[in-house]
Image 1 (tube, rainbow, N blue to C red):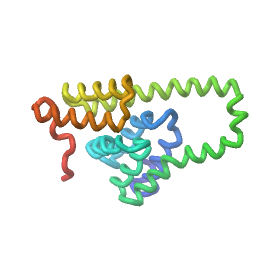
Image 2 (cartoon, rainbow, N blue to C red):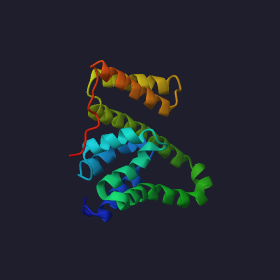
Image 3 (tube, one colour):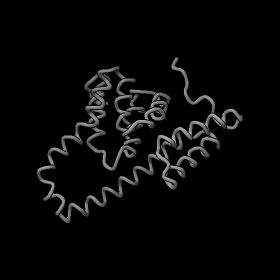
Image 4 (spheres, rainbow, N blue to C red):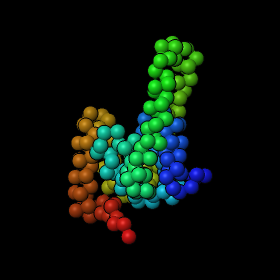
Length: 188
């Protein structure tokens, strides 16, 4: 980060991500991995442990900014990371709100936004690939992932229930000796 490893640098890292997010939290996963993990603010283990824990909360990936900021620089880091991530979107909302009817009726802007939506879906696909690469370590993990996706996506099981079912399946498979047993590692 060109602004250093302190509070300003952390705020800037999240502000930068918040400035280019479009399409929901999943599109920011590749950016978080690159700008926060690869930059050394947190480790991959800290990132994925937080990712697993945060999934049970509303708005999980945006809430992850506070978790990552807290891991990096404590409570002030949590506040700065959340403010950095949410600030650009809130500012844009208040800037565009008075002009919304003009924006909504502009055909060229609608065509542009359709392209942006398609690109956002591509980023979600990239995020799925990154998550699979870093979080799926066994056939049992893959089975739990796919089963949860089917339950939530096809059978409309609420996401928190899907997470609990995934946890129960993980525990059961680990007890049978066919799944990962050391996902959460203690910090040294």
